[in-house]
Image 1 (cartoon, one colour):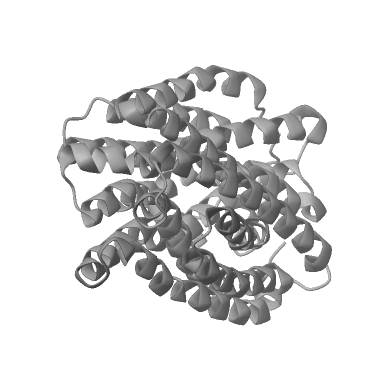
Image 2: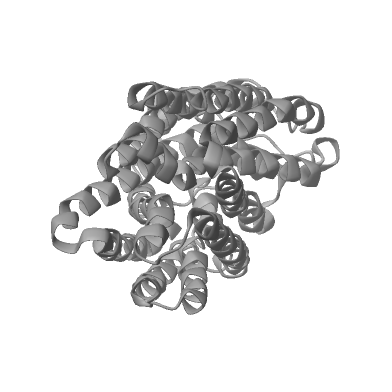
Length: 414
């Protein structure tokens, strides 16, 4: 049997707070490039497609693939130790981004950030699943996932303030992560583990168990399709606001910080609460809640990019941002039950591999490439039409998750 949570010794709420703080740094370091894309593109004379490579594949490839061996190590050894080492590594490479001299060196530094962050998420999912009982897991996962909107908002705000010296922005946020490493090791406790009744399955065994369940594939590809939209929109939103809405970079950074913080926090908490309330009676609710949210989000994003008044546009962006992030609590909880309980970190890493290769690896590049292709026809408005075309992946995600909802009850394991 899997490890049993030891709430009193593991201090679950303190652990959750620290894990969330590290996740904020994770997304701050990951996403600050988007707000700094305007000055970086100008200094290095890059195309939108090249900026998309920096924001997507340079980070996403190693982040996705190396998450699997990092997760296997975390299932065998200390998850806290793996995460602390990952935090130090990605923070160091973030600081190095500020010392680069061109596209190639920045690409390599971003690859280093991805290598470090490979060990920073799947072990956290596993820790949270052991910290909290099943009836609280979706809410706990949603609270942890608040690191995404808070981290993106912090990256936008800090990036906007330091955009005139983008190198200093990378160095400062990288040093902040290095300083955080020691407190994380001191305050986050590993839940006591019972010896499994059977030996831990091999990676091939874990993959075979997860891959044999249709719900795993449907959820992974559905979440990846939605993440393609999410990463693509958030990476290019600063440039869109500057080119199409007439914002300066500081105003754009504040707009994005507000949209992400208000919408993201509301959406994640709502998604987790609904999943805990409805998922106990019907497992399919874990997939159906995000499916409905993605359909609604696509409609509101169409309105948001077409409206001209900035104050009105703000709330039209907040609503789909909230809807588009409701999936984290429900789907992350479901994934914990689609493989061997003793190998939760590895099941999470397999899920993240598929999700991030699609979403993070392709999202920023796909939107940037679409913008380049549409520029001869639409000029400065090309990003707007790239956004509208990309929203089709939200519809695809909703279809896949609706099918997954019918399978979850059969594929679920405790």
